[in-house]
Length: 552
Image 1: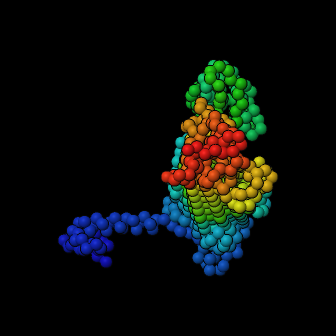
Image 2: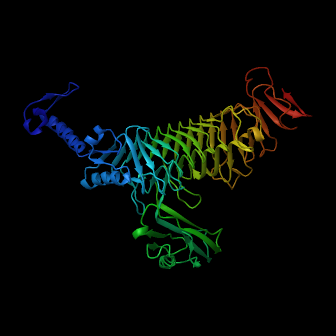
């Protein structure tokens, strides 16, 4: 016991656990560090909240007990008490049903955690009139704020079956939530997005682009629109215009500017300084410059958060949504989803308008689009299974420089929609990389399946349109034989498929194993046979008079 009190050691030496002989001074320092860690751990408190129908043993140990109505009030009070006491820590929910009636269960912007017992035994259930998220992780609010709090929601169920509002999301991260963790959750029947990582709109930036020299713009908020505002307006002018809207009144302050070129920062105050503040929208009649435009974007974005091992099922919108609408700038970035199941959603499995997100090892099944990346860059989509998607297993639109590798696209069933593509690239996207993916759909094109395995619209990645140059396709396995590339000469290598149609190349090139079938390709097309290196078999064929001819 003496060793726990460093001041009692002044002349003795002792053995470290590794056998190293430590001086008494070194040992004192070591024990002092251990004691500090123990004191810090004791400052992190754990409190229990019991459901109204919890077993009696839970109610005996609980510090708080719910009534079965507006149970969010009790849970939120327990979280607030942890923060106000300065101890922080974890709120543990018992087995049982927690009815979330009027507002979300909300983790404050502080180092706190909320944990249940399992996704089926501890249940947060949204009420009939709930028009907000059932559970929310709140980040700091204000310009360029980030909270390094590592908030955690774990091992509980979130059920939206009674709700009807499209704003009744299952789990929502809003504001600058930073390094949060969502672990072992079961999210079911959400009428909004099942998981929604969204920027907060309390602080919004307005700026012009393209160097306008004249013209006007208008700003709208919640159904009301300002009069015309000059292209070179000051912050004071914009503030007066916004305060003239009855949907805002005096609840906004504008700084910065003047336009063009220097952003005006609009900060909502008073009753509008809340996570559910809407986005300002802009309409322009600008002149001069080079393609003049305006944008409004938010400053508080979830980043570096992780969702791991969750079962997300039967949702009415997207299963996992990282960011909001494009191109107004409401996006989340640097977030990750690992090892989750996103199934049976009317919307998409994963939808992202944010940059630098990572989606690894997820099961995505019975959704509209498996993974949909819109207007964003540098996302990594790896080791996922994209099955039974109603429209496309994957889609990239705008942006680019994404990486897709080792994914399983499709299955051996027919597609749900005529005209679907297994993977579809459209808009100004380029620099995307596809490697070692497999695609197994084997049904006919059109109404009974997918029109194409991989397909690029004409214009994708063309010089001066895309951002990073041509896309790359290497080492993919396609059992489907229709793969159309109408963009700028994608880089192909070692793919296993009997038909690649490269519409952007003067003489389209086909790759495959074995002798090419005369039913594919047009006269003048080439075919590279991939299974005969170092043998006497033909390696290169050209189609002439309706038949493939080997070239020695």
